[in-house]
Image 1: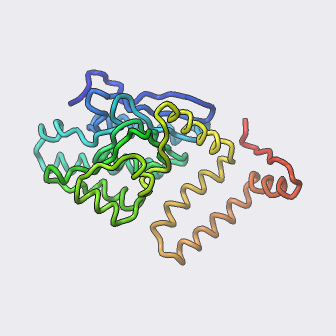
Image 2: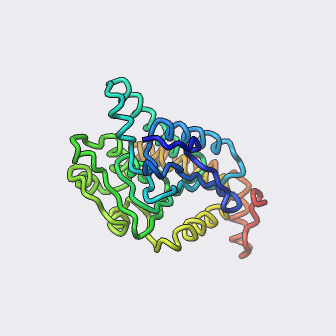
Length: 264
């Protein structure tokens, strides 16, 4: 069910170079409704052009990070065309995360289920509260979570992803760490600080290297190994021509701290 609050995604600036998007429909457990998907697409499109943004954090208000698709909305539109458009829309938004030049960190404070779990899997990094839980439970209601399986299958061991997809069982945050779905889990009161510390580590690195690296990482993952090495070599050669890399190597030789040109 949609919230009466039309502002589905809040934008915050918690630190220099960091933009945080906050899912803001707690009454529907931040369901990925059509309205929420539109809001996220708009937010990601805008931040992609923001050269001052070095890292994006994706968080949420309420008990849930995201409970996945809005089932009430789906039941109100039992048409094949509606479902096709909805899942294509969601997939397009998920791919935006991977195509963003900035790293995206999921800050997961509560449950993340179905497409909400998919959203976590598509972020570059994910840090969760120890109280967070994860599931792709569509199978419990007769629907295999096909689109979430794309993200899960690429961030977890295949058999562990299939176990979640076929059983619909929830896993806790530590199990999510062990299976590779998230990077780490921390006490709830230290969640935001932990995420911001990671953001600060990333923003301390040259922007060109981070952006080139993210683009390369996902492209090479879809290639055969020979093509992947060729692309990686080309990327490193281009990266070496950047002033930041030249400064970094000279600083290493001089035994001093690098002075990046993109530091403000």
